[in-house]
Amino acid sequence: MARPQPKLNMSNPLQEQIEYYRARAPEYDDWFYRHDRYDQGEAHTRQWRREIQQVRDQLYRITDMGHILELAPGTGIWTAELIQIGKRVSALDASPEMIEINRAKLGSERVDYQLVDLFRYQPARQYDMVFFGFWLSHVPADKLSRFLKVVHAALKPGGRLFLVDSRALDLSKNHTGAANLSADLQRRALKDGREFDIVKIYYDPADLTEILRAHGFDIDVEATENFFIYADGRKRVP
Image (cartoon, rainbow, N blue to C red; front, side, top):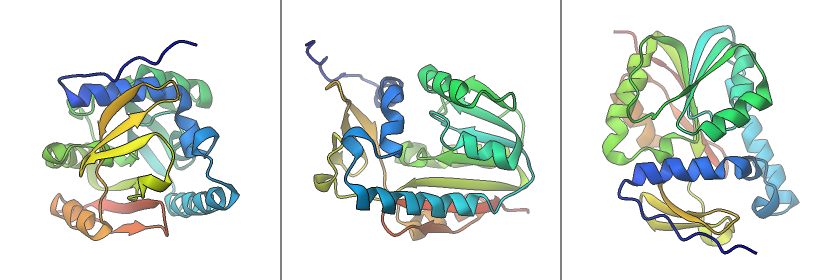
């Protein structure tokens, strides 16, 4: 058996985060669907699915969207939902491996893919809706304001913003190869033993509501019972 490669020691933590998600692409769906090492028993999986459905139900209250911008679409879990409520989706990700899985899974001509470093992205047009799932928590605190300004610029006046992300978990009870290094940094291990340090910031719903409102969105952040936070709102019209 081959020995795991040592943890990457990159000078740029955001580049290490990109490399992590490139390497994680083949096993990402295991996390979302609670398979393999993420399987914590039948009761856990049922609750997880109930809470995901709560978020999905809120998303499906949105109908007849035109062009949706999805940031960090990953393997297409949410892209598959977005093409049910929008006419077209532009999906931007920094991982070609994620894009390849997404494209193969959906096979939709209504999704166009772009390989983009989201920390360098500047929108060339405005969209009817912006969506990001499990991405905001990976934005460093010192880059959050700029990122939200980009999101604001990417939306038409009155355009829809929807996000979903993780609530803070007790990692001592969550055997998924993750360990907190600080308030905003985690060390993650893949199945093959490789380790990566990534940004992971957990938001209190009230605090995040205040941040988003301060950046021009009429929005409220909600929380499910255990696992997720989510928000559905609009770009404020002056």
